Length: 271
Ligand SMILES: O=C(O)c1ccccc1NCC(=O)[C@H](O)[C@H](O)COP(=O)(O)O
Image (tube, protein in one colour):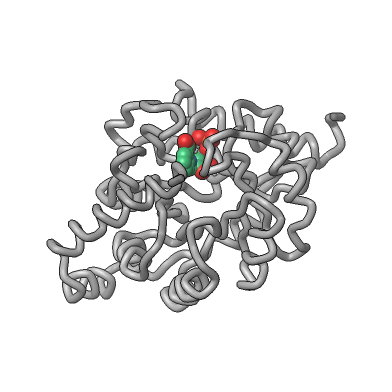
């Protein structure tokens, strides 16, 4: 039986064909040639006080439906950056998340912060698109890729000066991810096949991420206490969408996440 992830990827492939029909490879290459070089997010992520927050621009999701209108993604991104976000994630998938490459363009124009194109990457064309629209990072979901394609997309991102966030959901996927020699591994608390969110996935798997690789806790952060839990499990970064887009004060909330993490690191808070 097809999973939620299978359904999303089917739509992603159809939308990709539509874009490819209107933007030739040559046009995309021309855009790529004119874009500023990719930023390296790792120094900022590794040196973030407390925890690196990757703050997401997310209008809707398959699990929750509509989350927030976000008429000006650039404005939201500026609030995230002002709060101290180390990177900004922009969901560009259209059908279920109501995102677009235009959102990425708008956010790129608004902030100098490293940008993640958050989408379901299944073809080299999408990686080129991401860079051509100013993204510095891409997401590679291990569950959506075979090893050969995953390695090709990972290599392509490196050749373009980009960084890949390699996302896993279980121990077998973590092993496959580590074979790429990645710098950023995300553990998603959300099972993309069932949409169930279980923070124990993060707290179980993050301690298995080797030293030198930054572990990113993804999904299920509802407040500073969840950030503290993920930091105790070894998160160097947290990726947060819903809690920030539903929040009336995203700048302050990013700060509160960083403060909660700093308190854990200083030993000021106990479990
Ligand atoms: O968010 C979903 O419902 C979803 C469903 C299927 C595939 C991916 C999905 N989300 C992508 C993400 O991983 C999250 O946007 C990200 O980790 C932030 O999660 P949250 O803070 O819980 O919004």
